[in-house]
Amino acid sequence: MTFTQVDWEALRLEAVGASRRAYCPYSTFPVGVAGLTADGRTLTGCNVENAAYGVALCAECGLVSALHNSGGGRFVAIYCVGGDGQALMPCGRCRQLLWENGGPDCLIMTPLGVLTLAQILPQAFGPEDLATRSGH
Image 1 (cartoon, rainbow, N blue to C red):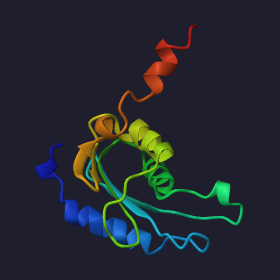
Image 2: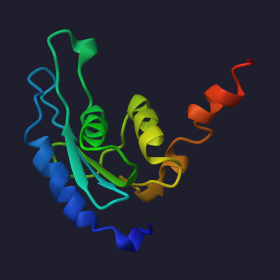
Image 3: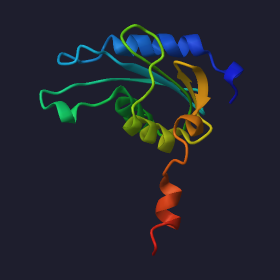
Image 4: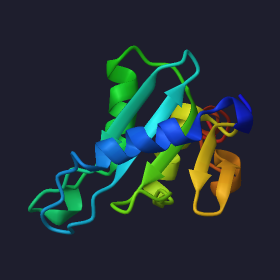
């Protein structure tokens, strides 16, 4: 998929809608994310916090769960937003989650514009490394 084949504004609006459903009473920092799958589905996720702060779920965790719960597949484009509705860069943990469910060529809107996951997670560790680098 190319940059011009993605309706980035539609993805952004889906992510904004998801951010409005975020459960963030501790940080008061809502995050929403929308992802377009290779078969044309648009899925969303929002952050869900917990009184035990370390077990909060990032919005991207919900997005990946929605992908697998709806039949699986791969993401081709992702848009993550903060409460202001503007592009927000996923944290490192979430970049790894997105890598495994979108791959290096998956497009992501960033504060600097559209990049690939390979550009925001260079030299990524993935499932192929488990098979080839385990020493077994």
